[in-house]
Image: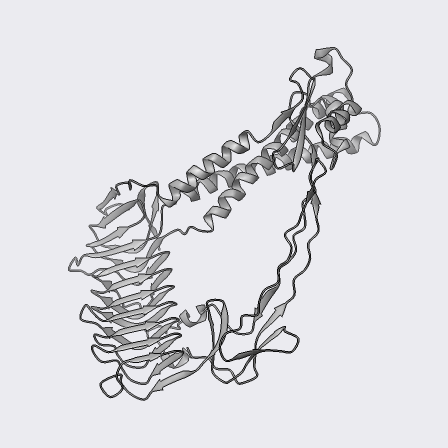
Length: 503
């Protein structure tokens, strides 16, 4: 951005391989196999070369020009060559005919394809309540930046006998066949166990899960339970002692210094937390703030929603949602950190998110050092984009060529083609064959990248308002120190540098 003095420093590469380096190495090996995946069948001197992919899902032929060799070759010769090579299924005789009709000589022409198996569908569980916990992070903020905590309704309840989940039965699959006639077994649909936890029961037909008591439905470690709720009418203090409860804890007050609150499920606190320790297997909702004196700490397996954090530590397996501000605190979220109060800010401390930090303001006019860590290196994303572009371009080109071939074939139904049209067909058909072969290979590579990308996430810092000098941004491969105030900005890594863009 013009006028902004931004210092960008590349991180030193780790001595060991990073996740993205390992992925790129694996892709390189996969690509090499794709380049070498077809093997010739038969002597090189033969005018018809059959190539079968190692997975036996397709076969191609490369036919030398009969004119050049001064021999007779035809469709039957290719069929015989295929059978000799072991190709007995999925033979496309029309494609073979086109080789001789349009002169697709010296190129690999796909002439046989396997029938892929139709995988069965595994049984699945249809849950009748929200098991993701994501709704608990949806906070409504009015135009003044205020939040009505009465509308959060974090603790859901179900009556005894309520339906918690229903099993949808598995469906069997259908076998396929390779081009060499071998059966391709389908992935059979597997049964799944009913997610039986505590205080639930299964119906007589084994397909419905019911609440055995009234309480809060909880999904944890693949099981559904009805959780008892433990309520404290006031502060956690010397009157109550520490709290360790298997279920959900609701505190209608605060938590005083040096006390511990531990719950296997969720924790909801109406007041403030002092220099105390809060631990929850699920989510934590604090209607007040954490004033931790550098020791107060919240640890949640799910998300943490809190008004403000002052000199405290907050760790969440999923998201951290702050409705006012965070000052000189450590924030660590497996996914996102959100602060959407237009007057709120994150100042000092350390902020780390596995995916996204989205805040109204960050840092302070007094240049307070405020480090922020987000995401991973996007090199794999770049590889994905290149492959997607190649596949898209090949598809578009193939579509155009196929339309032209189709039009010429329709003309043939009304009589022989003019010599110039015949020549055009002889050019178009080999091009179509080459494009189809290339498209299949590149699509396989792209699918490989898609599978690997499922385990990776991109990081981004978004600041709706001001990013003050003193903020330091860290990604997997670069750092940036803000030297001049920025407005409405986002920050992400590209080519081992941090890029500044609009919010």
